[in-house]
Amino acid sequence: DTGVSQDPRHKITKRGQNVTFRCDPISEHNRLYWYRQTLGQGPEFLTYFQNEAQLEKSRLLSDRFSAERPKGSFSTLEIQRTEQGDSAMYLCASGTGAWETQYFGPGTRLLVL
Amino acid sequence: TQLLEQSPQFLSIQEGENLTVYCNSSSVFSSLQWYRQEPGEGPVLLVTVVTGGEVKKLKRLTFQFGDARKDSSLHITAAQPGDTGLYLCAGALETSGSRLTFGEGTQLTVNP
Image (tube, rainbow over all chains, first blue to last red):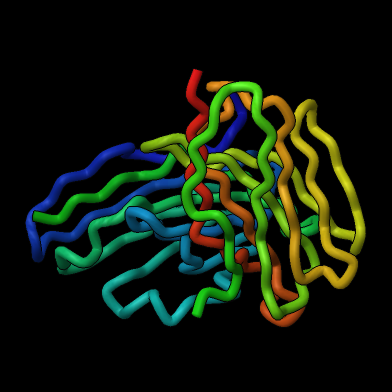
């Protein structure tokens, strides 16, 4: 399977803990995106990388959130000191930039207790 | 105010019926995508439209991009239970680079 993969698929944590999610994009895609989706809503943009450079960050990405793509391949999204409001589906997507077509992974569902 | 307004928000129809879902905005998009999402899964790309007035067909699904690139529609002919899912439109604004802006989605249920 050469699609976008995400790990873990589900994460339950207690408020105040740190969590880290991983995304492996489609191998030939140089762009990688993170989105967050809450129940009943469409995904909301968080940040995106072109190769290893983080080119854009949303105002939704508070200073508790950090994303990296150190070698321009996989990416990690870390949330420090989690809050109950962080509970959501975290989606990763990749693309080549052509017409901004983006292919999504299966998502990581986070529940903060 | 939602940048991309989708309607209807919910749609429940019988197998064999036709339906249309709308995606409207006052902003101009350089491209627009339609996705379908199943519960607990990520959105799956159906189509990308890039030219004003463009029409694309994917089996029983017909997608249209408005002439002014501010709106789009998805028409399904002879809906089947397997078409059930959340349909999302998403656009790349001419002014906001690479990020996609999503509508809130249309939850379609096709009853056998």
